[in-house]
Amino acid sequence: MRRSPNTPLVEEPSQLELRDGRRARGRRSRTAVLERSVQMASRDGLEGLTIGALAADIGVHKSSVHALFGSKEELQLATLAAARAILIDQVIVPALSSDEGIRRLEAVGDAWFDYLASDVFSGGCFLCAASTEMDGRPGPLRDAVASVMREWIAVLGANIEAAIAADELRADVDPAAMAFRLNALGMAANWQRQLLNDLTGIEYARSAWRAELQGLRARRPGRRRSRRALRPQEGDGTS
Amino acid sequence: MRRSPNTPLVEEPSQLELRDGRRARGRRSRTAVLERSVQMASRDGLEGLTIGALAADIGVHKSSVHALFGSKEELQLATLAAARAILIDQVIVPALSSDEGIRRLEAVGDAWFDYLASDVFSGGCFLCAASTEMDGRPGPLRDAVASVMREWIAVLGANIEAAIAADELRADVDPAAMAFRLNALGMAANWQRQLLNDLTGIEYARSAWRAELQGLRARRPGRRRSRRALRPQEGDGTS
Image (cartoon, rainbow over all chains, first blue to last red):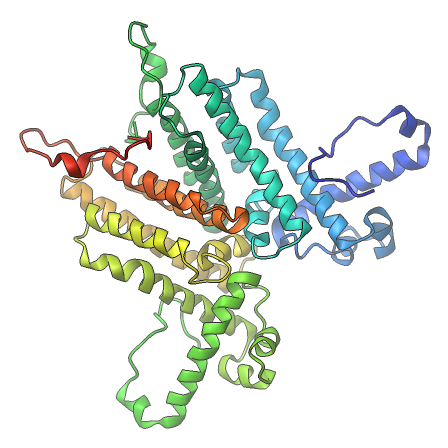
């Protein structure tokens, strides 16, 4: 079964599968192998992720990995789906408890920068790396990476639109341009951490993300605004 | 001779070399081969750049390329130096006619976005791709990529500092944080063009770069400012 990159990897097993021990074991093996493959691909790139290299990394025979994935491309697509599921779990799910709009944008930013500062992937943000690696290699894998990145930008855009509709952000904000600027901050923070071993980019990005949201707040004449909530980041210089 | 990535590739031949036909021919061959290798590496990555693959791409015997570069690592370092020389030629040199400080930052931004919109490298910004590819691979090549990127950030930082000193930018601007934000815009614009085939990111980045410079302008009470020069980007929503 080819797993589409649009299907979150972590799913509840169906009743049918619970009655079928082999399928349940196959699923557990697959999940265990994917835990290693996402780490390997985050370090060495998706293109370096072959069934042989992964089997050697885990210390099993190539045929065991082949039985689970069938082809290099299926392994790569399944690994991408696993990385997407981790991103959702780390960055999107924690923000769902905040209201759609500016509060969720704040929460997504906080969760994203925590994730970029963490060691979830040993080689840094999986999708940042996969984006750059795949952009010159047409095919199903590149399309799948582009699809995940479009989803991410769409999450930002939808919340910007909700914030404009709720009068939290100025009506003249261009949602696509703002989503572009917010995304740029995280990609650069990941770059600075991974290439230069420098975590300060993550804090610059966190401040700039907040300043972007504050700087574009809708003015609501007649309503008393909280000074605390609207006070610019001190020393940030962007608001 | 190993060429350091800090040495611009395009140099005037010395008198000694002009008297020595073999060295001059070797230099021409090297330059011609590097023109192909930067394109190849921009598409396939620096790691995929081997003497064998490059020789096959050019249609010559492996030994000819080996005679020019000696090892895969020397070829990779020379290719990086060639890419750096192109970046300098396309982005830094055109801005040198503008005064240091805010004018040069404007000129560097314009030249950078023109370069990102162009097809100078067939696989997009060489250094953006090399940064992500190399960040998980310790060694001289990664160090050389990091060194070039530090130079680039330093050019931005030095001009921000000059702009603050000249009272063009606010005194509370953090040069490193601002350089981070400016760099983020171009990296994301390159990403959006290359992965999503979408040039709008370059225009979002161009507007955001100008808005960043305008939004942090020092206020000079008592001086009459040009309304034209200070007018925010219309519809941009960031100033």
